[in-house]
Length: 122
Image 1 (cartoon, one colour):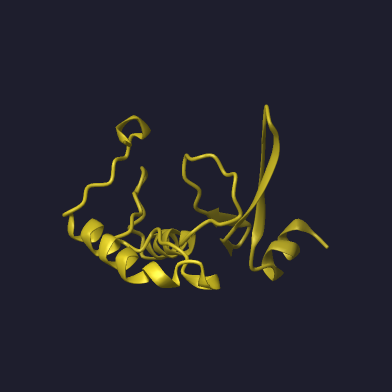
Image 2: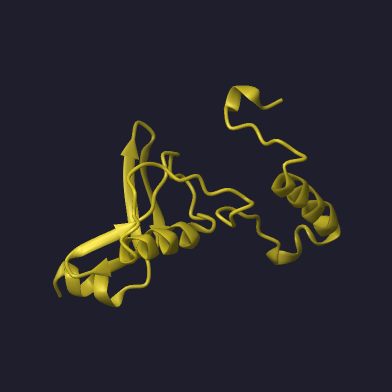
């Protein structure tokens, strides 16, 4: 099987990186168009298999490419744009789901400002 055939039949690929503390492998979603693979990855280290809502950015990038409106540069995907989220499955947060939703609503409305610089986190 060629690499192209493998990508054409797969729904998820794996992105592998390595560093001083060893290799890290995470799932990524992608789109294949001819011999070109499109995927969205941000600048943050990939150390978890819980990549959230990357499908939103992949969809937006593919749509803008198809519509011929794709522009170079960075796009921030946040809670308001459904680019990130939080998991509520497994019963771990059932008792605080209302508080989580309230906090998310405040972030989306701008009432709560989320720091983007780790030095700003208290």
